[in-house]
Length: 135
Image 1: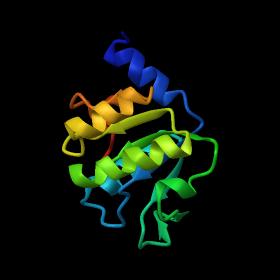
Image 2 (image 1 turned 90 degrees about the vertical axis):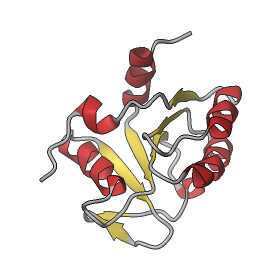
Image 3 (image 1 turned 90 degrees about the horizontal axis):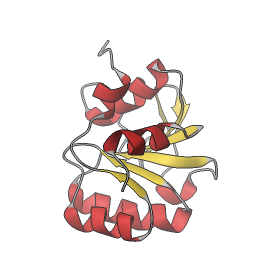
């Protein structure tokens, strides 16, 4: 069984990250997580069904539209949406899923783990792990 730091290292080893629940509203966590990746020099793709661009980056509407190189996704969605995100992530071949605090649901965690995904859903926050400057 991997430790949480091993899970986080595996997650962060990806070349490109998807941010599911990305938001154009700077006060929302979906925007803060996206900007956190950018501040840390990471390649990131926002996933939002309505927005065309967030923080100057082209969005995709859903997980199934993410390019193949996206192996890690951060999820900032309500728990009932996270369940659907996990289904799409499994179908898409995503390997790592980080459910931000408040996004996790026990069924989604169980389903992702059963499918062999590296799951981070213990309350760890990427804003803390990578370090985020809110401005």
